[in-house]
Image (cartoon, rainbow, N blue to C red; front, side):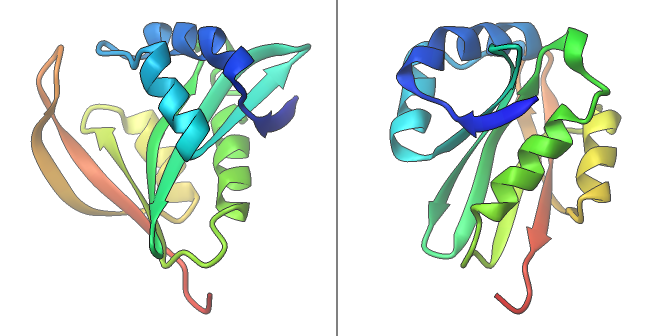
Length: 143
């Protein structure tokens, strides 16, 4: 597996991952904004995009927008590798935060294992089905 920044050429594959992972997927246009203005990392196996994550920062705050891995490639450490690489790019940030579906216990377990803590809730944040989001944050000390 290789991890690298996504480019415009990767957008169709990233949009397909979105459709396979989320009930309200981001469009290619939305993803293009992330590639152009944020940090988007992709995990590739044999040149195939199998997962990606994206982050934006404001001052010293980091916001992870998406973490997505094709269903057939889950439970192989891809999301962990993506997040670990993303954190290397978080130099100078006070924290990274993200939202996760309240029912997504597998993702929550991954985030906890990486040092993210539940810090709040966004009621009715998700659609199809409507569900609360847990806010999880990893604080960086000594940076």
